[in-house]
Length: 244
Image (cartoon, rainbow, N blue to C red; front, side, top):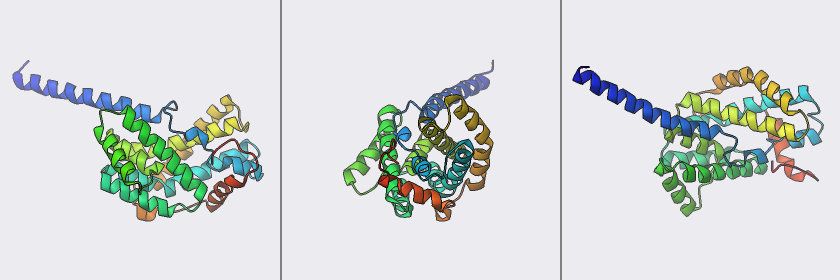
């Protein structure tokens, strides 16, 4: 083989090796075993059940679709912006904007709780991305910037080499996965039924992702204010299984 071709082949293999290594981190970010606390939250589903707005599989499907639409409109812009520009200043600024945008205390606390856990786990696990730990240390030291989940998720996606389209779909997937898991534990649907439901809603989730993808944070908005109200009522439930 000619020297130039040999060198080109070595570079290609090196790039493939780097890309393959990053993919393992990307997959781990979506793994349910990652201890980020997402399964401690029902996204308002538990309150919706007690308010008798969700009482069966059909209601559940409608709830999940509305939740995905609201997630896309409100949070995907923050995932998108941090994935494109995963720097400390941009991430902290987006955290402040989202903190001012979220309209109920239960949702705000849930976002910060999950974001803090995700950032802590990522900084400890992804040691090949040292900037994660340094960013976390600086932000924890300042004590003034909240760790909201959507910007943290986008930041990590950007630093592990995930493109913006994939990161936004991944965020929608994590949201869908977690709320269906909550529905299973609330006995709305069984494990097999949950898998069937997740597959059925996948096409809807893709449509919602395309609908709200690649938007600036200035376009972030609520599309389902009733869901926001329900989540805000979670703290008043007499008995509850989830944190939100």
